[in-house]
Length: 382
Image (cartoon, rainbow, N blue to C red; front, side, top):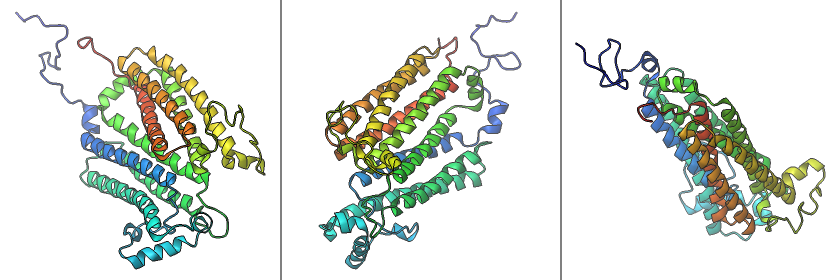
């Protein structure tokens, strides 16, 4: 007579108890080196975050135009002697930033801003090398899971594009006789926006590789479509705010009005359309650019509260917690934004504000991911 079995007991195809889960056909065909690739992507993720932070510090210290040439290979080596340093300094003296703004600089002062820009570019080179070695290694070992080759190649392609966009940005400020003392703000916004796009792809892939294919296929059946749609909208709204923040940073608009909630004692800052033609005010008028950044921030916060309330009603505890972390991070970011304004964007507060934008971005992505692939609790676990 057969023994009674618990209704919670796992069984295999023959009907006997199974002490371990067998790997299904789906996972056999898609597995590859999922853990290894995920770890590699996490390293890339951390490096991109560092790249964004160093890029922000490079901008805040007005160091971005200290290297006036784009030498992807030979530029990896910094000046090695005083003659080489003087040659770099002489090149810098030819551009408008030095001639209009920084004629007070000595060679020692120049070295300080040079190292920021060199370090920023060097991190970019290292990221490219880490991607290339990892991609080639997994490809040659035939360890890339089915359907992932294009995704992993995309990250490298976007990284290469980012390098070109970076020089396109710097070139806008490396001028002589045009009166430019900084890079074009819209090019800076494009550069930062692409960095967040790259970061978003890496984070999403890390989330996907953290779970087996069979788990993802099953979880997709429980997708909370409305919540996924709302979190997608919140992600887009966050991206717009990031771009607006880059426009503010590009023209130092964060230091133009340091009162809050008013601007210069008014709701709308004085002379919001003083530049001709009219459209230039939305990119080059510090008062208007900061005003738009503030207003979008208020709208973003209101929308975030709406999405958070919907997230709290999720049937899955993990999804609820994800949206709780999103709203908490956004509230911290709002406080940091106000502090940045009140203290006229000092370097230490402004850079924390920028890094916090990365945290908000990734947490929204995480909440969106769990809306699409919720983690369900089994009867045994519950």
